[in-house]
Length: 331
Ligand code: HEM
Ligand code: MG
Image (cartoon, rainbow, N blue to C red; front, side):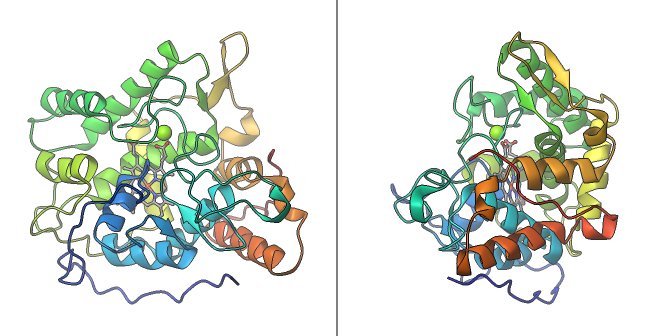
């Protein structure tokens, strides 16, 4: 399956989601769902294939249509998803865990693609509603963590509106919890960036555009029920990578946390300066160290797809003057 990216969809502004063609249907027992409430919700409404086995184009089109994610940013996320946890020859990735529909590459050069729920590369520690891999269920919604988030809405807001302040405090508390309890805590600059970015996603994608602020019932609909709330309108403008960077900064600013990981003695070691000071360091960690180098040992259409996806990730970092990175991670 030769991978090409579909052209951008025109922005039709703040429209009612879902439309009549995308009703909610609960996933069946073999449908794949995973650690991303955004993708799970899209699949539950058929904005992604309902079986949870998706192509790069499925992600790119679905994210633009359902949430008004910027085209270039969608291309980068889809490309990283395929490179890190999918089968790049078949152009398929599972939203959850392993699936017979996403077999290993020829020669089994990178093992069985685990899906987006497999720990490491994309899924990582210090999530908001999933446990750290070493501590519990890192894939599915965890009610106790969510209940804790709601206490932050009560303590730092009015119990109804989910403000920036709520995530500034809750995100930091999640790090402290992992720091204290998880002997394998891994929070390198790529995952660190995603972690804060995902809090930014919550504040910028989940609000009903008709209401402005994010409210508890709307947030619960996405995280807990993985369905669009009744009468929900998506954001009017596209949310770009620039927007994500700003939103992540806002969440981290009151309580900065160094990116890093615990070593064998259980000491948290911050990442080197070349990583943490710039967005290009984040890119180096993601596109280099979280994508296996064996993908470069390929030929033909497989290699063409690898190159297409490497460019797909790079497309949002090129304007920031980062140097193109090739995969260098372990298989
Ligand atoms: C988390 C993938 C789009 C909201 C995640 C995670 C993955 C992922 C693998 C798990 C990371 C972790 O917490 O360990 C993707 C991909 C996307 C995408 C490939 C491609 C477009 C979206 C969109 C939204 C969203 C459009 C919101 C509308 C979130 C949130 C989390 C998350 C809030 C954090 C969950 C938590 O910490 O409990 N995503 N995502 N994502 N995603 Fe997505
Ligand atoms: Mg996680």
